[in-house]
Length: 382
Image (cartoon, rainbow, N blue to C red; front, top):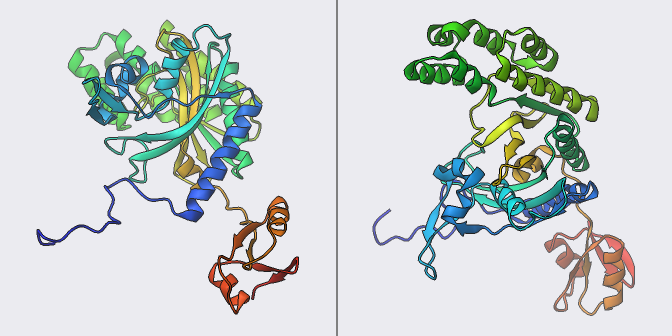
């Protein structure tokens, strides 16, 4: 390209896409279906802004996301602002401020767009990522963890995804073990990297007195019963044991709440869980490697316990079966408005002609209509 050539107007920055009619409508309809299930369980919708002051958005739970946020100067206040990379910290702020006096448990839902500096954990090279999720604020119990996952499972079933895998982890477990082992800082850092890579040999090299325990937990990752048995048998200090027992309790509550779902556990997984403080979960559709959503336990800005799960609608609707489109009916120029109104009430999509055409069938076909209305009767367009 020479310096006097302008880029194509269709060219977008990496990680950003246009959603065209079919996909945009599927996402809008599907997101509304998810939100309707959330609402039916008492989760009330809130809508935080896309932009906030940097020190507010990236404080509290949001501090862990500072490296993922776009920043810009507010020309009015001359203060730095940031685009949200995640909605959950905003919910934590709202719960701790505007809804502080609201009775607990506080159940909130949300849907909106987020923007990341890099790809993060989203996959698919996306940088603008839709989110739709729920947060349960106040109770800190295995039953609260299971409620969040159960409601999300019901919402996914509403859009046609019924075969699910919930992958559980407890991010504080490994740091608590390493912290109590008294390892030198360099060895602790090397051990964290080894666990992140699932490198058993490096864990043996750097793990010191806890190497055997970590290797056993590392090899236990997988189906829930296998992992839970390894956790039960592990020689864990008091703090790590409390994390292990809570993970076991939450796994049992989830399986009781969502019978038939697949539950897997990775006891030593901690990467990507930047502000979480307890049981965490990633959601997958069986047969697909794309993550549909993730969430877990964290603390709101005033250290109030909370648990939530955020779905990525783009990923959800790539995995969900596409339903049939409502039939499109061409209304020739001059058709009585009452005819179109009745058809729309019956679930049809109407496309009105704006001028006379000698061949109504040709015009209906050109506008991708399956039927045309003629004297109040639907005529198939072949």
